[in-house]
Length: 290
Image 1 (cartoon, rainbow, N blue to C red):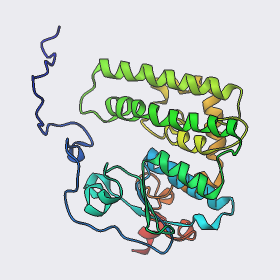
Image 2: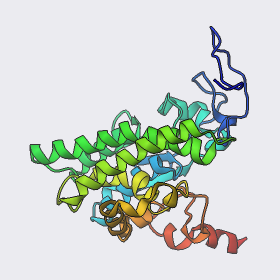
Image 3: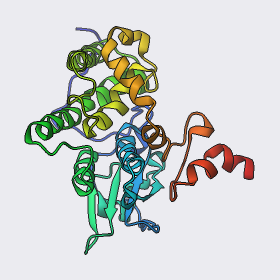
Image 4: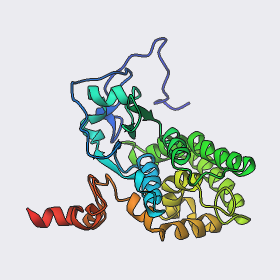
């Protein structure tokens, strides 16, 4: 046992130590920290989010619905700056008591219907608009199998591997080894599934693909965590093939831009209130107008 081995106390106490990138917004209690109402735009669907993998899942689905010609899926997407604590405003907490993005309100329902948890939103939108979720029992069940697989597996990728490999203030071998092993196992699960299927749940593009791609598709292409070489991403050939195919979809391309505030300014659309915003209000256009 090393001299710096941690021995847990009998009762844990919150000490605001340096926990990495998200220290300022992590706390052991729920509820709002300040009063702030949520803005409401012109469309029935109001989304409050940020283009993290969980946020992108929902905007990709909304843009894919619009790409399919379903105009009723038009929406307003408001930026939630999680590093500033926007998710702890009273209006946001009223929609999502868990204070995590994304959060959504559907004002076409009376009273307006709140939705939180990205998987719940995806299932709701797919059912409401009758798209990207097979209607036959076998196809529907297989799609939901993989949607829920993503919800259960991705915390090991994000809160586990991503935190200790990319964000933690210090590198420690044990947690990095532990979560790398699990993430590589998950990639192998996907690679084996995609060996005999064009898409995650079969021959049909579904909400399962849209849920899994922002996490695992972006992982193997190096968009998140910059860990391609470390995890030998190129060895998961079927996941790489699938990820690259999805990246060419216009709806997915637009969806990953929404509420994005990092990277190439031409690929950032901080807020989205109209389809024309992709041409007129990307960050490079906003900067040029100043």
